Length: 351
Length: 61
Image (cartoon, rainbow over all chains, first blue to last red; front, top):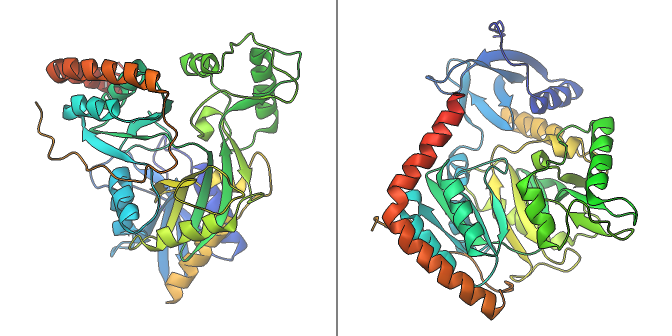
C-alpha cells in the first residue's frame, strides 16, 4: 500500500511523526502513503497509515480517517460529529440544548454584517468576533470593547469566510481538554503570549529574551512571540508600551488569543483544576453523536472552584485536534494522547 | 436589507458575564448602530473588495 513520494512532496507533518512513534511503541505497523482526501484536491499529501489488526486507519495533522473500501483514505473517524463541529455556532446550540454552558452569541452570514453590528450594539460586555468555520486561531478577535475594533474584526472575518460569529468574550483562563472516547485523556492550560517583569528590562527586551529562550529550547509547536499592531494594541490596553519597564514578578500579557502560533505557552496537567470540569467536558463529548477523538476549548474563571454556569464555558470542539502541545508542553509533563488514540483504534479494530 | 433567515438564533448563558460601564456601553452602542446603517448600504461593495484582496493574496500575486 506504500506509495512513492511525488517529486517535491511535503514530508510527514509533526503530528503524524508523533503518532508514528506512538504506534511503534505499541507494536503497530505504519507506512506513509501519498494520497488526497478529496478526489479533486491536488497535490497528493503524505498520510500515516496504521495497520491495526485487519483494519487500517490514516492520520495526518490531527485528522483520523477510516480505511475506504478500496483500502485507501476513507471517512473521518468522527463521522457526523466532524461535520457538526466544523460549525462552531451549531455545536454551541447542541451543547446548550443538552445543558452545557457556552458563551452567548449569534452567527451571521457576511451579507448580513449590518445585523451583526446591531446585535453587537445591544451586547453589554466584551465581545469575541471570529469565523464560524475557522481553525488554528485564524482571524479570532477576543476581548473587543470599542465599536471600531468590533467593526474591523467583522470586516476582517468577512474578508476570508462566509459566516461571522459574534459572541461574548468570556472571562477566565483557557483550558484545553483532549477526549478519546469514552474519556478525557489529557488536559492543558493555554497561557497567551506573555513576559514576566524583572524591574529593569523593557517589555521589548523581555520579549527578545523569551524569544531567544524559545529558539534555544525549540519546543515543538511553540512559535516566537509575534510583534506588530496586535501586540501594540494589547500593551496600550494595559497602559504600557514596548519601552515600559514593569515590576519584578509582574506578568504582562502580549496577545489575547492563546494559540501556539501566537506565542502562547502550553502548560501540561491539572494543577489547581477542579475535577468537576473534566467530568462536564467528558459528558459534553458523549452528548455529540459519533465523536471519538476531539480537543475541547474551555474558559474557566476560578479553576479551583467547582463548575457553575457563571464560571465555566465550552468555547468549541475541534474534531481534528493537534497533538503536539500535549506531547511537547512548555511546562509540565508530556501527555501521551497519540498512545491513547492508537489504543482506541486497537479497541475499534477488535470490536 | 439582506435576508437574515440563515443567521443563527441567540444561544448561551449570560450569567456571570462582566458588562461595560454604562457610559462606555452607550457610546459603543450608538457608534455600532451608525456603523450598521452604513454597512447595510455599502457592504456588498466592501465585501467584494475584501474577498478579492484575500483571493489575490492566496494566489500569491
